[in-house]
Image 1 (cartoon, rainbow, N blue to C red):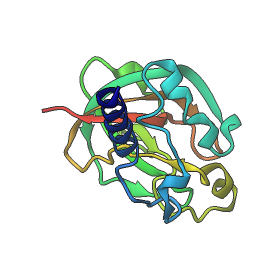
Image 2: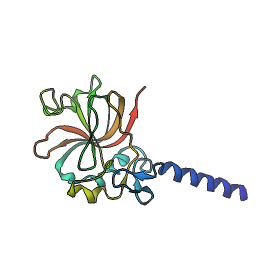
Image 3: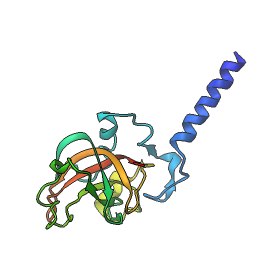
Image 4: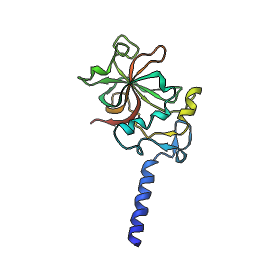
Length: 179
């Protein structure tokens, strides 16, 4: 019985430590123990991608094409921190995935032939309408660097906000570096 208690205690400690391995959240500079750990806790599949939607501000601005999509490619430009707390990242897709792009993503468009990735609520939120949605969001999603070859999973959307119209993975649920 004592051995079972010890094993249970150790497992619980490992789970808690694994879900909260970053003592401070950059999103709002607050103690992450008070936040949801949406990446490791959510699981896999469509439910995992859905787990981040409650943190997206003005979700009605998107047309959702696929709730959970995975793409691969190379980070073509340095990730840009935005006022809404998101990272705006441009991914040059690997061959055979051109169907994820539209004319606004094209080489003559604002996204220079890249698919946009949005890692949400990762930075200090300065945009008023994004503060509340990001309030309890803590993600440990990797922000890739320029030149990284990555596999990215999240919701495939068109951003219909005025002046946009390009396709994105928004929100990004997971980023893995491909070796």
